[in-house]
Image (cartoon, rainbow, N blue to C red; front, top):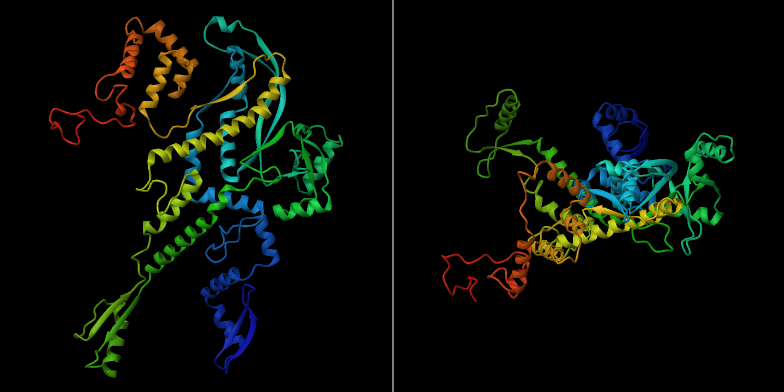
Length: 558
């Protein structure tokens, strides 16, 4: 008769024991505790049980528990802060997400500068951007926006004197500027900032979430007891006490439990930028949330392959004796048993045709099969690059038009970069311009490359050259198309003219360029004539060689 009882293992785990034989609990416990496998199995059982309140609180403070073989690592949570954590975990650990983040960052940002129409002021702005490390911070902003779909940027202001820099004696004699400028930029942890207040007509504010010790120190700074912390003095205006209903709502949305110490941040020095967000929404949706399920499937697939790989290192040896016509006798089985015990030491087994030996291992036919990963990885890639996923094809598949996909990716990257540009101009550049009477020209931020180009269209480049030759666009614009800055090229050409042009003088190409432009527009050969539609193809049809057969369908002759 079966008997059920409970007892506590050596590691404190409560175990239910079902006894089918006449043994007491002490005998079971002594036998099981002597086995290391039991401790491992009890830990797995504990990780797969329903989570307790203590485990939920621990997961809120740290990363997700993982369960058996980390089964819940990418399960989509409801709370926004938990979604932030899962997105950050994906950016740190998944190869596709990490590579997409790195490649988009490299494609979007090379250099950044300010244009305003005045050489001296542009030089001053370049010095300001260099002092606050704008290039590096732009990459940080992109990463935060990629992962969380929002970032929080803070700055501190100070007075500084700048002198115009440049080449030659003429610029060295130019004036200096005494300005109130940003001294540094810093991104705030999205888990430490929460929007509060009324969201109607953008009246919301940002509040800093502090712990109890931080709250006491910040209160001392606000009260004037500690005036040495200039960062807190500049960035924090007052303590924020939400109403009971708002506090309850904030906890439901974010999952944060330490909202008793909130401090309002100075909106002139701390602001946020998000992806597309409705005015009534407290946070922008985490765009990476759409791939959490795919990441979870990929995680389980890897664990499945891992289990097969580990299992393949072990095997079972099956030795059979006899067949249906001549079954093995007891004497033969006893002899076979003795021989099998000797095989481990002496790999020699002797028998007749009725003896068979099989090695049993897990089926490895589909283990690490790339086809099983391609569908998941392609969908993840399509989501991260914001491109189409149609039918059974996606980014890079044989059914795609790669040229159009590249253009879709480029437009998406340019759009997100443009929104960052406008946010920085609104909250950083324009306020600094308005705070300094010495600055006369309104600044605008410009990135290099001006356009994100993932494909090479020779006709587009030729059109730009034609516009330049007609005087419709500037030299600076045409240089920007090929990622060169006019100021740098001017400095290089100045040096070349002084040192090298006496020997290595470039020829005058203005007349040649004009004649080529006229030829393309007024007619020409089979591939260059303006009336020939093939002249506007991205990949023009090759010219017919002498070996081509006249009248052949593949020939260029019409």
